[in-house]
Amino acid sequence: MTSDDIPIGRRVASWRVRRSMTQQMLADRLRRSKSWVDKIERGARALDRYSVIQELAHVLRVDPEVLLGQQRPTPAGPPDGVDDIRAALARYDIPQAPAQTTEEVRRQVGYAWLTYQHAHYGQLVRVLPGLLDAAQGARSTEVLVQAYRITSLLLVKLGEADLAWLAADRAMAAAGDNPILAATAAISVAQALRASHRDRLALAATLTAANRILPPTPDPTPSRFGDHEVDGPDGD
Image (tube, rainbow, N blue to C red; front, top):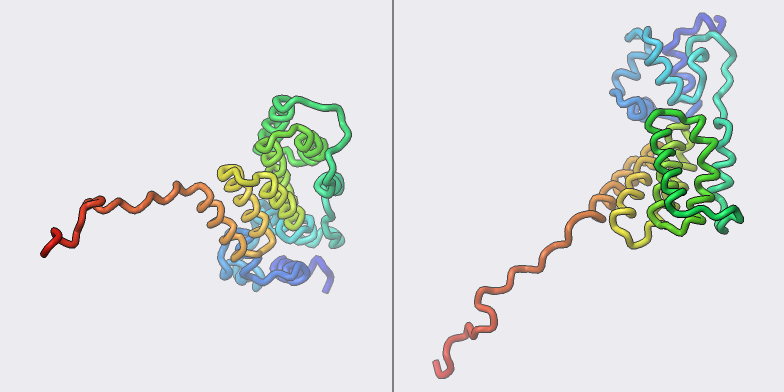
């Protein structure tokens, strides 16, 4: 049997196993049920929408044509530029670059968010290494946290979950004792952990984020008796 003769469901199952995923793990990544994955792999459900095939291919980190049996199975490697982001995250010293004002870097971070929202990931990959360097030199906690967060979100989209977790962890460290910044950073940690299939840790990080922004618990209501004696008048 040639590769073209293999049913697409069996190709999905084969690549799922190669990626060390259970059916439930694949279902979670696709936001579908385990039963749906099982039926696809057994051929009990048709896989005839190219958009769904693209989604499967993205999660399995192969080209859609591989699942369709139209080319040799070459696993998709890290996108160009990811190594530059990794190098920027690995730096602990403040880069020796021309100083920019905090407002200039803040505008760059805002532009990066827009680029992410419009799914221009290739463009963002090229921008982020320099943005991370600039954010470290800007001496603004908020700007630095936002730069790490956008980096983490992009890396999740690119399938680089472990590197995404590193960026999110850097955001947590940069946030320090600021409860709002720490909460937003914790959400990025949770997203990276979920992309790594560490669902329990992701839930714990989400709860941490929620607890960071809960209003403080008010002190118990003072007794209505105040400082009055409650043991009865003297002499009784």
